[in-house]
Length: 480
Ligand SMILES: [Zn+2]
Image 1: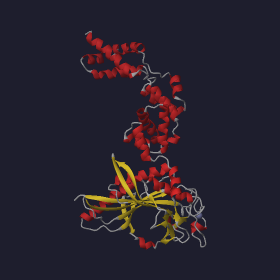
Image 2: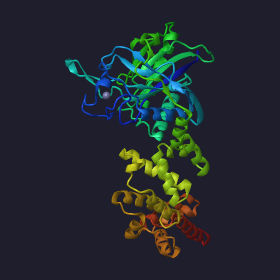
Image 3: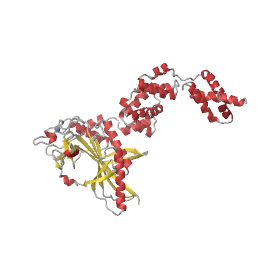
Image 4: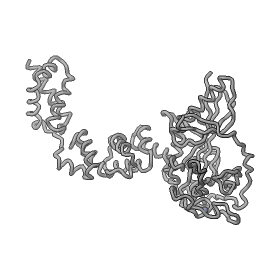
């Protein structure tokens, strides 16, 4: 039987505010343990939470960017549970009245547009952190307790592991474009749980789902979901039942393991947070936030395709981050050959970024200087291959293209008379290759051009070299 997977994701994104959600403690990552805490985030008696307005602004931004309806009134609720990383014994979250509902996110998977609908986006505080070290027990760090999160809950519209990771990548891209989260999965500022069930393909009834936790990279997300789908299918095929439970992904052994049986919402005894008034977001607030939202990733990709005549593939890569897209647009201001600039960025520049594991802001060549180099190539002043060498030199020396070309005498030789004598010499010294050509093997032309390139240190104009040898060899042929 053929099965299909039904997958929904719950994504937690840490908001990049300076202070925590309900107190003025710093949210700085990597500080000494237990240096960012106060009576509020420690939940000491008599302390009162005060809502961080910036966190609400950020959450509204994300809700707007993902086409959600924003509720005028939303309510903070206590989610009660005991766990050592939760000093208060409850987490302040939103339950039946979240900030935003019914949105959607669109992205491409293997060239096809896919839409995933969102159930809700709500605001909540993070728990603290436990460190399990050796046999001395566990250590608690309050620093993360109370940092602001949004939770983005999708409908189970996802069908494959690839769709899940592409959806997650799109969410991350939107968060980064909006500048509201650093999206760093390694540091845990972007986390994801997946609800997975399988059913016979073509049926509507949902199977029993399991919840996967600890998916802290795109790669783990895909691998864990893949594993879990296979595990559920083989249970069903063997006549066994899928148990509703929470499972943990083990990235070392590449398996999921049962962690605990799934808790129900009523286990948490949700009730409205008595220390906070309802959050009221009026039209004016929303429209003020709307005005601060710049072009979103999908809008930018579509504009790049339309205005610069690029393929989806090219536009998508160029718009991967806002900074990369800006760099591209700075280069084409100087040198508006859209295709050439796109090719150079996606091949040469991106290779350098990948090899050195850096972002475009740390790329040593300024956009206007890259534009100038590409202009020299386009105008035929230097060959494309010499251009690549100049590109390397620009990175190494910080000099501009014009200076390197001048100093090293790299100007392309397009003057036939200059190449003529060298070509004659090559023909004279290559009787075997000449014979081959005369017998009809035109591929051997490449050999002659290669020799000429060697003699001129790559400076010969390849088209002219090609014409020159063709002319000379055809003359030999005709003269018998
Ligand atoms: Zn605090």
